[in-house]
Length: 563
Image 1 (cartoon, rainbow, N blue to C red):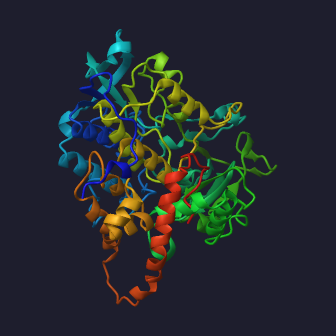
Image 2: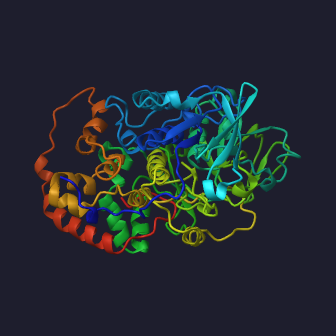
Image 3: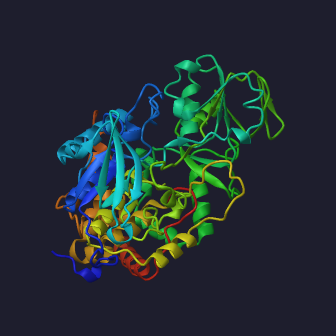
């Protein structure tokens, strides 16, 4: 049944002022692949420039960091499950595990590229040297792109540019914040970009600085071979497991529109208390020195092994480093750890676009300098988009894809951006308070559902719960109470996929399939869930009505969804 336009939240529509046909896509990682595919869907002509010899970007593992290309370390596994991270019209194979090692994820990217015939649009071993406005940019919106392939430079003219290089570009190594590391310390120090596996650290006493996802993972891995591992944390940290209650993938359980509605409905103090109680139901974070319920500045990491490593003493948590001496680290609480062999900085990355001309690059202080984290608002023509420069409480892959769909729809003339003044006002409203000499890159995570729903509304592809309830109650239940998987944004609007409904209704089958290697008798009674049906209708009606009347902004504190 066709969906009435009144039931779909759409963005501004109208003719695009400048005809876009040829689009340059910079980078063939996940953001680049979805950008190529979305360009093709809209009838545009993409040309992707990739400086390496293959697709995958960050997720294509390299044994060394000598190439200058940032890649994952050998043991890395995704933090978001396959159903929550997959491309919206190309489900991950059901036999793949729920959380993918980098090799399987790269294989999935290759399957996607082959299926949609994307490789023919990619020029490998080609570096983009510069992207500059054409002289008539104010009227044409065109860009001069200079590339280099095997020492030969070439000038291209493109109607639009999609920058897909991500935010893992330049390692952030804040040595100035750690007195003595360069002048006194006699051991080795390195950034996590250089880390590939633990073997080189066997028998060493290692200090890991930074307790993000990378710092936690590396500390745990090093603990299996190092003599001792110290993990320095500056801020409060809540640790969460990928394995949720009853063994299900945590994001498929927590990232639902129903939970999102409850978080919207309840006072923030209540939702914060519920989150902290959920975190502490696994282990008491205050006892471990990680965080307390009074923490105001905190972040969340995913790590199943860290609590046990701390419990067994193979990883010792320490406060922020005050200074380094020749062989030791002095911490802010006055304690000292002697005979430190290696300091590994897991302090994140700084995004950089050296190929962009200065007038475009200089205002880009962070992703919040961009309209919807995509468009530089100061340009006379919106023909430059930055894809994937966003941090979400869920999958960035899914976020990049919905960005690319909206952007290419704008390029194709299906949607129109608001005036520059409105975009600039929106950007200024979302800028955080300016901090003096921030010691690490500023990263503000946004709610996965808030952000993707916002962009989906702009693109006219956000499903209406009320309309689904009237036309397809079974699907409405799955969309509202089930995981907010990317397939939901293929039910209506441009790019609608006929397989979206089936993909949503079978998502749990694909999630459980790789676990069915030894089947035991099921003692659970399906009647135990029948109570849900009595609550579903009033809850969905209330949620649909309230959310349609009072939308909440997409910016939330760091953390995970409510439950």
